[in-house]
Amino acid sequence: MNPARLFNCCTAHAAPDWSRFERLELAGCRNAPDGEFTLSGQSASCADFFTVYGRFPAPDGTCEAITDIDGARDALAVAAELAMLSGLICIVCPSLMEERPR
Image 1 (spheres, rainbow, N blue to C red):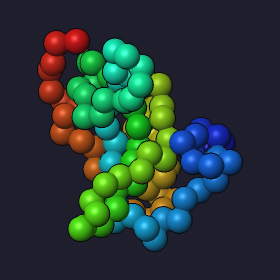
Image 2 (image 1 turned 180 degrees about the vertical axis):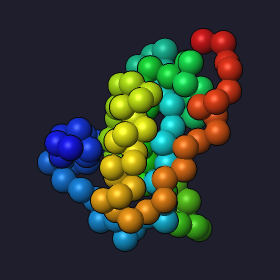
Image 3 (image 1 turned 135 degrees about the vertical axis):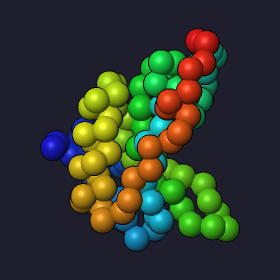
Image 4 (image 1 turned 30 degrees about the vertical axis):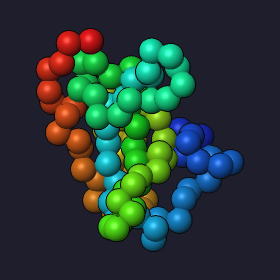
């Protein structure tokens, strides 16, 4: 896959230092109504797009966006490719399965 597709949230579309992360996570996202930030943890039915994150180990525990993907099927394919490239497991966030009103 094209680096611009795999790493579109990373500087110069370059792969991050994978050793900084304990795992990858795929989550549904949508833009906040004011457009100032992104709401992660959305169900697939509510998501505007999907993001693969690298999760930092505790005690930090925060995450860094690696790439944004438009469709759910494409998101799964990209997440799988990133897991293979990085050697990290990828967790699909359970919130993707929830039914939530938009």
